[in-house]
Image (cartoon, rainbow, N blue to C red):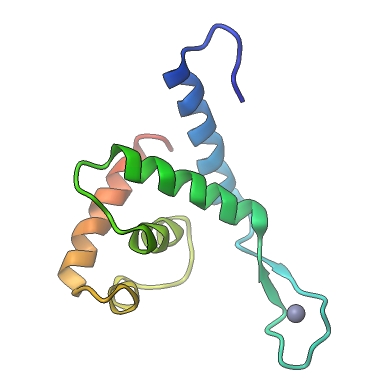
Length: 115
Ligand SMILES: [Zn+2]
């Protein structure tokens, strides 16, 4: 999404803003029509997921402290409305809750600059 006359930094920011808007406004999941009796009838929405990946890439590239990829994905998804908790994320990523909370603030602060 590069527009003539924009610097790379500006074009990059435009792209990130678009990804943030998608992450904010798109359904996280689609209705699954596979018909299987054991199916939860929910599949991940590809558009939402790829917006999240785009934002995770951005967060990790500008973050001063290194942040684990899976942790960053989980915190970014939480920021954009996925139902989870810092406690649950901490357990899944094998870190303590306080550390997860610290990273959460870091991720939110970065995402705030593009939203
Ligand atoms: Zn299904």
